[in-house]
Amino acid sequence: MTNAQSNTIKTSLVPIVACGIVLGVVVAIVELATTASNYDPYKRIQVGMSRQETITLLRDARVFCGNDLLIGNSDACSFADPWREYRVTFNPGTSRVSSKSFAFRRPPSLIFR
Image 1: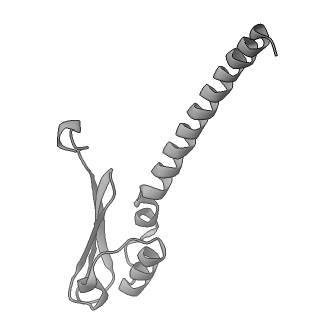
Image 2: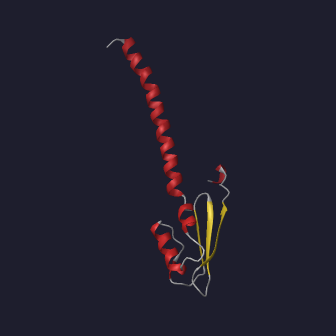
Image 3: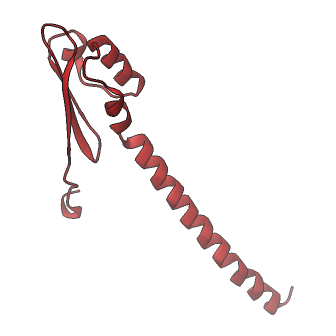
């Protein structure tokens, strides 16, 4: 193989490798955003849904509110993801969802990470 052929191969590989890296980063970001967010299970919770249905829905989505909710000692479920903080409140008399809310989280500064 001559030096000219070697240079041609190297220069043609650079764009292919760069495209592969960019594609990999994009796929990783999309995958992280969809798996790290708890918004989907939150939006599936409906006002009036029973406590047990809510716990099952969240458990299936791998979202946990703590032991107090599971044993019935709490009338609220709070959970978070990197972008939002969620709260689901239950009516103590009926054990049904009475309200739900979320607030956007302020991303931490790069200095404090």
